[in-house]
Length: 250
Image (cartoon, rainbow, N blue to C red; front, side, top):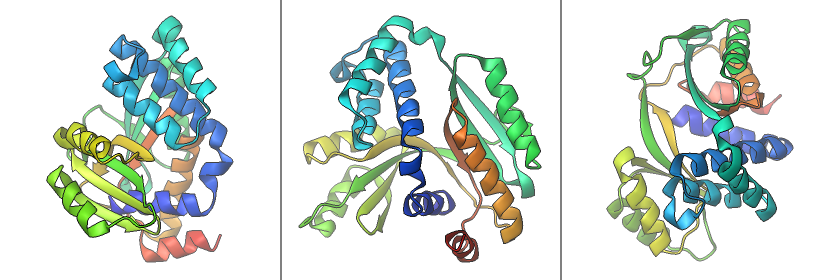
């Protein structure tokens, strides 16, 4: 998990997320649309996946009009989108799991394969990375002024928190898959609105590579994330201090 979370922090510091805000909104809108389609209900109070999707959209300051349009699209033509999960090994045998929402499966698979093979990787068979990644609940929570972190930590542990990291003004909490709903309810009880609440694929073991080889993997990951059909990219590349420093110096 450390490699993935450190990479996310570096992207925040470099302002990459703000630079791609329209891309973020597009991904959030797709998730809202599919949540309506899958749940069959456009009321977030009655559709758990939609409720989380809307919460995440608000956490990224997505305008209400955009959220409403995405919900409306799900009611009308959400069937155009389908979920695609692709597994691969990148350079240095780094494991990569790609989650997509697409209206054209053939196009998406071809595009993802091209990006991965161009950077020295290859797609692998479905389920081959199951032993590397665990499904975990991951909550990103802004730290508000005056909050008692010790008391909050106790509340979080009681609600199922397995791990808690504090980085400047952000708390990242990890839960078991089965505790995702309970932890979300605890946040609602505490009147805490997370910036993000997601089910992520967290690596059990990180893969350490030389900086030059690790940069090839990270370029591949950035290219995958730039693809309009890609929702999430998970990997087990270890973000060493040496690699982190090299990225910050770029």
